[in-house]
Length: 199
Length: 192
Image (cartoon, rainbow over all chains, first blue to last red; front, side, top):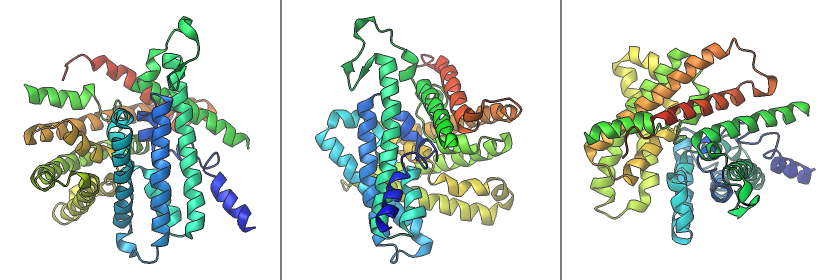
């Protein structure tokens, strides 16, 4: 029973409550960094790191944080982990960090993280919170990776910079532009709607 | 001349919503009616101008002299959150009419990534104080413009026959994509 429950907390982030495609949260990084699959994956991992650690901390401290200042407290916890992630990327992967630009620090205001802290972590034990945020983080990464791969394949004919089609491929430039991000995500949301509705 | 370039660049060429993807949540959420789009746009522009004034001062007069740049994210988000709170209390007390018009949008602004994004871009682009203020007004104007266009389209869209799965967010995103395409026409207008 207990295990089933945890399993459910973990799984719901993938399809039924996918943060990007169903709840439409965190669209800003989802659109901005998905020019290549690698950028999307890095962003996803950074969000998993920040989301899991900050919601576990929030859940552990949930009885100590006064209700009136909870949002401010959550934000400081999140901002701390974002700073850690940003400094780590800058030190170890400077190239990648440069191509993600200001979108790593912008994880601070990513509504997925504050939303999970407020809606789940502040009311549940840290074990359940851990599985919930890991599932949500993976669901986010999954959505980003699909959009990133789609855009990279269509715009350059490659994925993770590995060429797929040889020289005969005619690149679809619009997909690497901002417009391509909106169009791609719009189609993905529609497909997701179809899947969820069929169930 | 440079100030005019910064303004135009922030407002149309590098529109915050359509090319930097900042402030997408209110863009999709509040853009159903022209009147609420105007209210949200005005509130965001107002808070943006106040934000750059305070974050620029804090960044250049406190964080840099004390070599505390690594604290910038924590400091910026705290400044923005308290600023929004103060503005809300002040407007409520002094301008009740304005509060009734903007009131519900103000708390939403704290988590609007366009505000924090603005502060981060201000640091990245190393703008001077005046340039930062112009940049903020331009960005706010661009945000309002995008929101207004979107809400105008969506008011008409209510009467259109949209295929089932695309209803709601799907079609809104695709419209945003087409808007982004048309805004690309502005690129090359000025280079900065």
